[in-house]
Image (cartoon, rainbow, N blue to C red; front, side):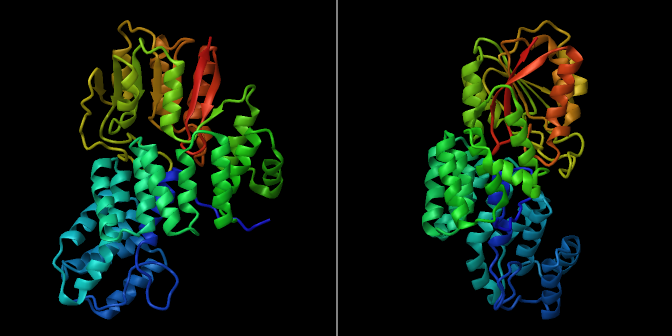
Length: 446
């Protein structure tokens, strides 16, 4: 069996695209590793400072890199080296707003003559990385501006086409996503990442299986790909590869546990590969005359998509980010920066669920058509389910956005749904799942 390498991720598609944040930096002369480039003069920076920062970056001492680089920036505010390093490091630390500031400063800076060529060489990478960070912040339109600029500056930039493909997927443009990902494969046929992302644009297990097989031909040790392929084969009736992985010590992998849970269900659910396909099927199973509810709205992309088939929708969110930390995701992540979406037919109730839901559902409400739970947290999801119990019946379709695959998925939305069912004496039937997007669709049986 191949030696697997594992990508630790809370979002497979985003992580595979975001790997370009570190990969896009030009390698140092004589080195195969990636990190801050030091092959040319860095203006006012002494070589000893460059060497020290580079060593700390290589050793992943990112907090120290941020502190030292920020102090040196006051002496060399237009240093391409420092601005790129600060952007790279902030992105790695998921301090995305800081990364945006540094990348934009790099784009706008007037470097010394010694760094002018360096900036020109870096700009496609910087626009690519900035696009990724903006996408993670939910600023998709802004992200598209920068990834298009990266490709304009370097048309044969395979990694940028991969990034653009994942962004178009986020914007529900699956045809455009396929075009860009196939372009990335054409430009760099040995890179497995575009193949992995390409599977999220297809509509059936057969297509996804074929793409994953091609992905693993490029990188046989890619653990998530190996497990995902074993899962798809198991869903199609061949559990031999899944059983082999179980016996080889991979049973505790979160995707393996997710596949095992799906296989344990009394009825095989539909398997999907992107959230738009999941939403389309949920809409098909629902009654569009009923209102739509979403718990956790963020920028409103999912809400806007689902509202296309509903006359009335209600969205609940603080619009200031997570009210508490979620595993490794800090409190305040997924903020919309206070911006409430403007969507025809929608009413948004702003505040924490514990404060807004009891009041909202104290008034008579008709049964829900679709409920999309995208609050991530166990406490928030259970709060939403409990307070919305009066509008959930056998005709309500429930979508959970972070139900499986995450490292401790059994303690989040999965736990909330199972506790809700136990408390109210009901059961649920799983209608659809997606390993790639971690979603689950179900109906409640009273």
